[in-house]
Image 1 (cartoon, helix red, strand yellow):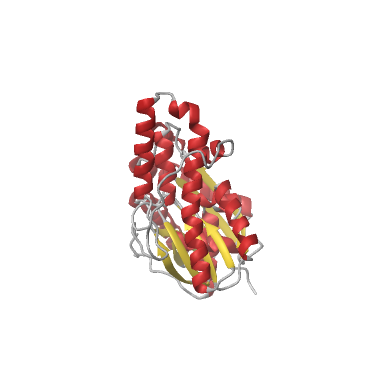
Image 2 (cartoon, one colour):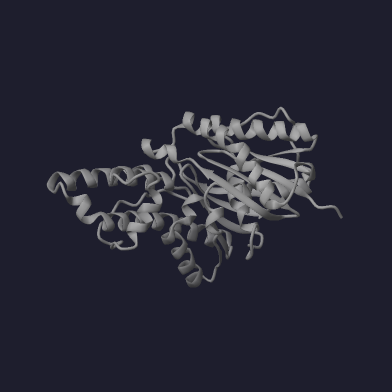
Length: 335
């Protein structure tokens, strides 16, 4: 049986990534990060688009080289169709369409959040169906019931801001450089998670809300710095640990409730925030306590990457789920 060789491209935000998948095995996964946004404290969409344009050709060329394949070996090209920043998605999407058309091979569109979930099928161990996946990033917070590779149901999601956004906003208030999430995680490891208490959102069901928590953190810091201008510098590690603890508690309580409601013991986390050491540790603790089988992706597959696009495309390829060349990009795309 001939090999299935796929090229995948991810460009939904500020990372330009390309990967090659051969028969369901990701053999190369390269990402070019955009340092330019550090000067602005966050992603600037227009700059992100320009950087993607600069990076995409060399990243694809290196991914093919590392995989040891030629363009003529490819069976299909996959790309992130959405959700994400429109300008960034257009760069990756137009490149993928042009590449597929030039080679006269099929095109596969991939949903970014679906791909985060399926990143668990790149390496061992792999979850069994059905399983629950807490998918947490800067733009999304969801609990997904995964029934099959391409059959997923969102059973809980944020009603306003994402958990990753709460991390990012806190980092900005603490005047930490962008991206601040990993720095909060690092500082939290030397702080006291019970030093300060923040309000816990009271949302019914399996949905989340982080806007109130963000406001609570803002008012807390304003009040404390008014009394002591050196408060943040003096207690930075404790603040980070307390904020991180609060966010993780919200996430884990909802995940526990979902596992109980659906009677599922296969539980995973995915998305950029799944790289957080506190969240990874808590999942393992809950796993031992409630007898879950827990799954945490490798660090390179937590943040935006083309490896997860490639593995998702592989399952779509096996089912013959291709898309037309004129399919539109969807910056807002419900899974």
